[in-house]
Length: 158
Image 1: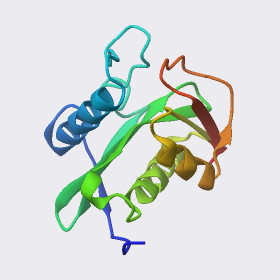
Image 2: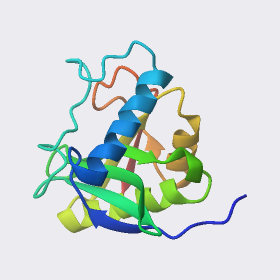
Image 3: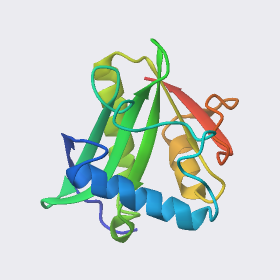
């Protein structure tokens, strides 16, 4: 396994600057992975600036040696539960602990906002993500958000 790298997280915007660029890279990758999927369709769960901003949500970018290397957000579901959204790490650093560090940062962010429970989902072509989520303590639950692509929905007490 490659050496783990250190990531520093900063609040960001999902639709501007480094956050916007990384979120677009994630969208581009998903569009190739799930050809024909309408990412902005009515059936897709929403996760834009309105959902991923304070006070009920958040968005962060992670930096390694000054370069943006990952992003992700926290979206309010209700007073007790949030959803972790738009997790993305740059392909050249995968396998070096970036996604795990990002997930833990998003969980910490959710705790600071006041959520005792986090939920998330992932699709069939992202088995590595499901493995990470299970490894970090997420247990499978029924579909909670109607994501037409997801095959795993998970929940964890924070």
